[in-house]
Length: 591
Ligand code: ADP
Ligand code: MG
Image (cartoon, rainbow, N blue to C red; front, side, top):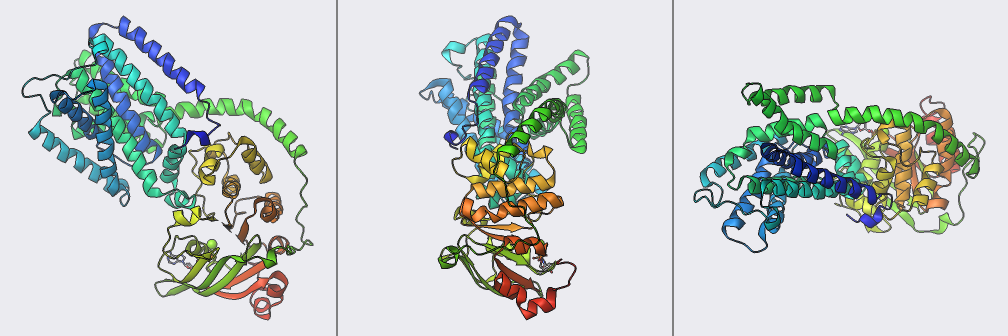
């Protein structure tokens, strides 16, 4: 992740929050009595582990039920280095333990590349169970001989160690904050919503998942290492699969992708058993309570943190709405006028365009689904910087064409080249990076991101504020700070187009970009798309049902019918083609 790509992140205040947390931690470490200091360290270690779960589960949407196994790895490494009297002392051992746990996280994440949902849950729980059995047998280094883990010199008393744990928590919290707002964080939230959408943005799905597992597990490792320093002699009973399960539920329930909520979860982790103990109830009932709260969170679809934020956002949104409408009015007044698309406008060819080499060449593209030939020997060329309309009735094979070109359907017949380069066998991610982008007929825009984060994620290049604001205004999108969860699906499609344009691809395939837009918005989008080649230097293939709009926007047309190219070429020629006239003119679906 390159922080430099994200000038929008204000570096100051998260660090200020971290410093305040450290100050509060210091006050607590002086003020709390001995027993509570011990509990407080436990809450901090739990908070760090839950923060990790917030990444893999909360952000990236994968089920990982072995967080305390990663903690055990961290603890085991710290204990082993302690016994070996390795140089560097506790802090270095803690970092090494985190790295080891992170490595284990990648290994456990590998099945996640193929498995989802319950299957992934079973695999991770199985890993936790196997690790538990192993740990009970081999024990932690030093435990048999009573060689306790040496804390850092400056933090050897319990109070000092608590303050040390607060320092570690603050460092982890600030690091997670920046990771969540950086490219990795966006990729985690994107992959949770749609793997296809993630790949189409040029982001490797594998990398997104594995980085989530690695960072999450590394935080687990830090948590375990801290626990080793707290107790001196760690035991397997602190890291059982059942506790991992409870921790997972706590993370779901509190909304642990939010850092403050992870800390809240850590407090609950020690508070609930402690209260039960005081009330004379067996502590195992804590698991039942967590379980019930977790079921509640899963069935209602919102967690505590999200619930609190939704209330807060509604309030601030209302306040901002008035202000925003003023500013967008002003922006609309300032933006250059656009020729409205009317049925009388006819798209004409840019003279420069006809001379260039084709950006896309498709030869003999054939796709079969069982007995169905969805595409049958499709050949066409798209000159650089032009707009080609792809039309044909529902089921003609238009979306299949986009899928095959963009790499989502492998194993088809025929050849596709982009700027003369054969794309055979290249993944969707690779093709997107080479400058072949596509949008989807269904909504694949991750709602967990702001428009700003999404645009930067999709564009994959350095953008300044002005670039983004201009492109958003150009396509009639809401301002960059808007959360995507708060806008309708039609607007999300517009943002998808704007973000892909900012990637400055060679070719962008738009699969019914106007679905979900009102008639006026539809016309406005069409007018904007007409200016895309000259403004962004991108060629477009647009799938669109409204023939009047197609006529006014697309100088070139290709007509598909039952997977075959009926006609392809300049608009006039195609529309005058007898086969097209016969098949389409008067057909209600087209008009
Ligand atoms: P269009 O986008 O032009 O409406 P599609 O490309 O979505 O059409 O579909 C073309 C044909 O291929 C349709 O008959 C559709 O039912 C079929 N088809 C599309 N995807 C699949 C798939 N994954 N498996 C089987 N059939 C499919
Ligand atoms: Mg379609």
